[in-house]
Amino acid sequence: MKHIVFVIGMYKNGGMERRTTTIANQFAKKGYKCTILVTQEMSAERFFDTENDVEIVLLSDYAEECRKNNKASSEEIIQRRINILKKIRSCLAPFKSFEKRVSRKIKMLRGCKELSVYVSNNKESIYVPFGWYHMALLYEAAQKINIKSVYAEKNSPEMEFSGNEDAKQYFYKIISKANGAIMQTEEEVLFYKPYLKNSKVIHNPVKDGLPKPYETERRKVVVNYCRVDKQKNLPLLIEAFEVFHSGHPEYSLEIYGNTITEEENLLLKALENLVCERKLDESIKILPPRADIHEIVKDCAMFVSSSDYEGLSNSMLEAMAIGLPCVCTDCLGGGAREMIKNGENGLLVPMNDVKALALAMERIANDVELAEKCSVNASKIRSELSAEKITEQWIEYIESVI
Image (cartoon, rainbow, N blue to C red; front, side):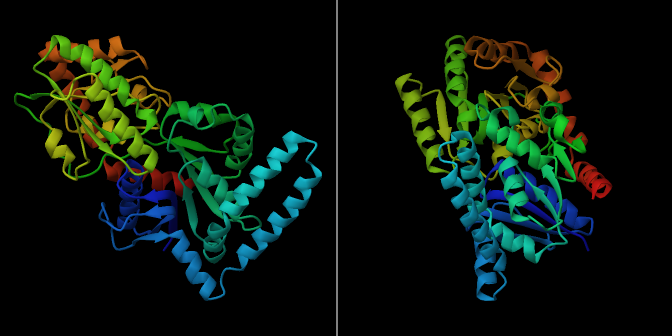
């Protein structure tokens, strides 16, 4: 039985966790043993069901157990490398650019110590790191171990490396070592193309069990449900809704915001303050996330995403699958552009354009035929991006490059 290890940062109630679990469950159904290896934090509450052959492992717990059983010698090897690099760095102090590169190497080696323990004890596994940071950690952790890996992109790489040319060049070298790479959009492929051995675009799966598209009169509610992150640009949504609402006072806006980090809690508070400052308390509600979110929003008038960048938004895909008319910014990463055919299965608008976003909401509200067409056509991705079909593509690709 082949062992697939999906490497992610946190396991809480986010889209990344849902995507990984959905894919791992489908792999397990096809006869693979799967581990979701969590490098940072894991909540005590489990938000997603897993198959019997899917194990969720917190890396720090695994490493601690190995230390008790004298199976963590790789940490000592990593520490020796760090000590050598520290001596080299002290000699490079006059040469700032070289010193910076060595410091970055030391930082990555410190970060990969526990991962090196896992890799050294699971050399035959196939690793699927999500995001550039985990691919870099895996590369450093597996020095002199010939592991098999397939990189999986999770965001817009253009923004991940914005203003950091050294980090980009460092990662270009690392990604070229992977056996293959799974991208969410064609735009991501173009970003990495000169450095990839092999890659394939595979869209995110739509989760099973979503409610059927709603077919009768919709509630006059604009909705967004997402993680409260700066990249979502939720202030833009609030400002655009304010413009839209001035001509459509019968509509309200509901934002179901999921927060995981303290920074996200601060952003949520800022959004609440913005709503109060604009005196929109009666028409805009910022609500906590819900496990039954799709049942709650299925009869809303429209789903609106105001993101600046995305890999491929899970909330957008789910909204389309349940037949919500969608308005999305044509954000960096290319995910919205790749899924939405403007005027056919949704509306695309420029980024950071309050007026354009408000006008698109108005089009959906005023044109019943357009809203219905977007709803019917959007819901077709329900079968196109089913978890089973998407995972078949993953399996076929991984088997072809490993």
